[in-house]
Image 1 (spheres, rainbow, N blue to C red):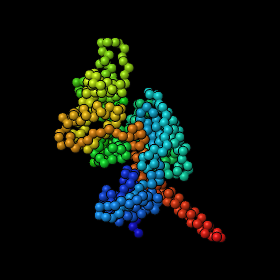
Image 2: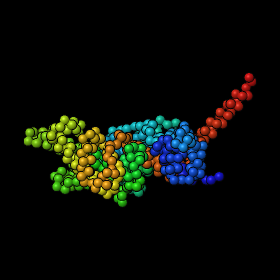
Image 3: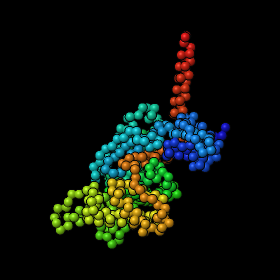
Length: 419
Ligand SMILES: [Zn+2]
């Protein structure tokens, strides 16, 4: 009998994890494998209990196509999101559904105690039976700043300088641990579980406290030589602008279009000359004012959208993405920002490229870091053949064999009873 190659299993699992249900014809089309290989792999995965047959689809040719679904709880992933104002922990299944979650506040500007990260994850593991615990494949971590080869993270906002987070998690949980920078994690979440599922060339841009970007080009995640690519916020979008950036320069995109800087410009403009006391305003108030055509709010929104549009047009011109997904605080102002950004893109991008690109907002909300970290950990963990065969394909098959023996035994027991 033909040996089932690991890569066939991986490609089919990834396709199923991304789409939840597929037909055999779709697998053939996407993977390009020959029908015999796909049949072998499907038989293997079905026998292992990782794939379920859930129905039939009437095809055009009149042949009924079996609909295949991934057994989403055949494996679990642990995810940690260290970016943002909270530490978030989650346990997800293979398709990224969050099964258990836990979050803790962190104080801004205070160094994060690594033990809190290790202990916090214990809170989600505590919900699992020992059998389920055995089906956890790996831990994925979405972190701010950057990492070195040894899995040590340096990030100013959590006060870490070469902090050995991977080593600490491996020691505590004896699981493979995969780390990824926040912008790269976000774009992976969008590409595999979100709006960009069908876009092999896509860009995710977060516009919140800061601005950053992650990119897929020809379905490859751009990592860059330094590992700190995606610092899109520090692209200079207006060299003449007086706006001071946290990086020390002036006119960076972030200094004009990040949420705090949008609010700052509005406060400065509406306070000027009237009072020495700065007004207390938040982004929601400003956006509402703009919706009611308040001139200062509109001017600030116009300026931020123009800056974003100019910076994005440079990205589009070079990478030619088919989809740009915006996330973060800007999502709450999409009605104001999207049409303005589209107008700027239309005037700064060559028509052929401009026609090909769509721009939309993220639908993954606050879970984006957790979902991205889990999806990233899933894909990397199944590169390990032992994990793939024993962790994903092993336990369920063993349980089914045990159940089969039990039910055969019980039916034998009942049939042997005197009638
Ligand atoms: Zn800057």
